[in-house]
Amino acid sequence: MKILVTGAGGQLGTEVCTYLRSLKYMVVGATRRELDITKFKKVHTFIMQEKPDYVINCAALTDVAGCEKKIRDAYLINAVGPQNLASVCMDSNAVLVHISSDYVFDGKKSTPYLEFDHVNPLSIYGKSKLAGEQMIQVLCPRHYIIRTSWLYGLDGKNFVKKVLDLARENKEIRIVNDQRGTPTYTKDLAAVLEYLINTGAYGTYHVSNSGECTWYEFASKIVELFQLETTVKPISSSELDDYVKRPVYSVLRNYLLELTGDKIMRPWFEALQDYVGEWKKLDR
Ligand SMILES: NC(=O)c1ccc[n+]([C@@H]2O[C@H](COP(=O)([O-])OP(=O)(O)OC[C@H]3O[C@@H](n4cnc5c(N)ncnc54)[C@H](OP(=O)(O)O)[C@@H]3O)[C@@H](O)[C@H]2O)c1
Image (cartoon, rainbow, N blue to C red; front, top):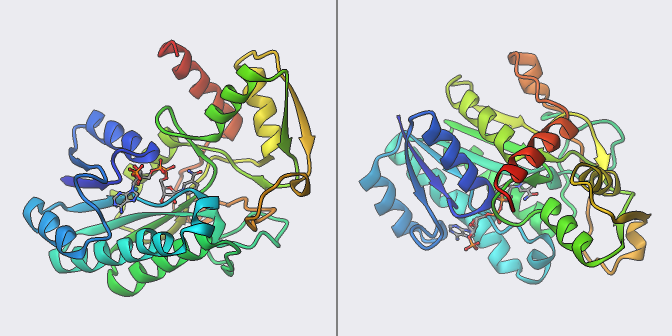
């Protein structure tokens, strides 16, 4: 089985390539420089030459605040990119696996979002990610759309590294305590991606670690597990200079995985504990 991973230089793309190679899949990892998903002709030529059985799209514009200012880029990368991949996958008979986001929801629920819940993104990032999902649904029936949340891995930028950096420089850090979601370890997500592509059960899935917390609770756990001497102070979102509308509640329930299989994701704090162990092994 040959698998093309786009956005292979990013946080999740790096993890997915490493994980699949460790299981002896034939993986072609394409960074942005090697394959810009917004260029239809290049996508067409690349896929027709490589002839992958699966394309896993980890490419995206993920800077949520940046998307509000770079609206054109957000739609180009998060919607037109998936559209290009979907149409070429359809022509070349490849299955498309696409990563989407909890930000397709508006956060008005107070119980975890199911795959069947109404979407209503608040931000440009969320809207462009939803548009990407819709392009794929229309153009390429053999697809998996995987919505995940609050990703962190050993590579790339993420909240864990941000907390570590802030904690190194400050005795006290202030973190919002009124947005709830679920941190998800890229290693756990990569394992479920591999599981899903072997089921043949196409569709839209929620895949995040289990449980929920606020960013403040997440930061407090990071500080505790890394044994940092920083105090974490809870604040409200209104105290931040953030112009992005974010869902206050974006917990995903992996309902389709519960209904159709036996894949239960471990709690987020257990995954974080594992991550800290891996981090320490790398001696960073
Ligand atoms: N991070 C999160 O908390 C989170 C939460 C929910 C869902 N997701 C979704 O998970 C997926 C992976 O996110 P991530 O955290 O791995 O993001 P990431 O680290 O920002 O990786 C995205 C990668 O896509 C590349 N890219 C950007 N534009 C491209 C283009 N036109 N063609 C090809 N590659 C391009 C980027 O390259 P450059 O760096 O060179 O621009 C980067 O390597 C995304 O679909 C994201 O929406 C992420």
